[in-house]
Image 1 (spheres, rainbow, N blue to C red):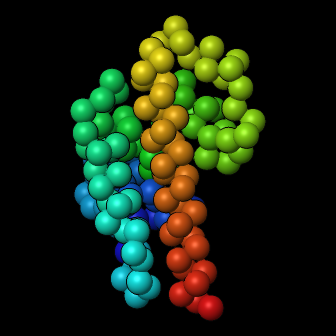
Image 2 (image 1 turned 45 degrees about the vertical axis):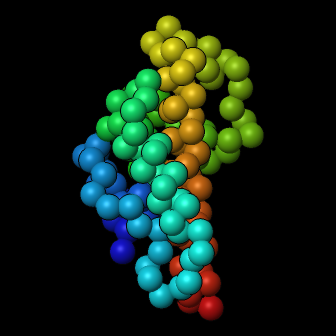
Length: 128
């Protein structure tokens, strides 16, 4: 069963809030057949444990919904209303992060948001 945040919602890829560590990659409670779980697991492993321009612990934290203070606004916007992200959101971070780092941050936040939605969808279908 995925870890939960203080609010009770499932965290992406079972990361403990603020820990920056990835204990286990789980997307499904096991009761429902998920033919794409192995592909998501491979993607999560490459994205969250692989080499990158940013530390893997940062990518893991962002995927889990926890971000450093300077990235909170961007990560929250990506997770809740990605259509609203603008060049200005990224321009304000370019003095601290390279384009490669920003790309990885955006992908990690997007992957975490997608995982949260898949977990919620599976729960809804299992309860139906």
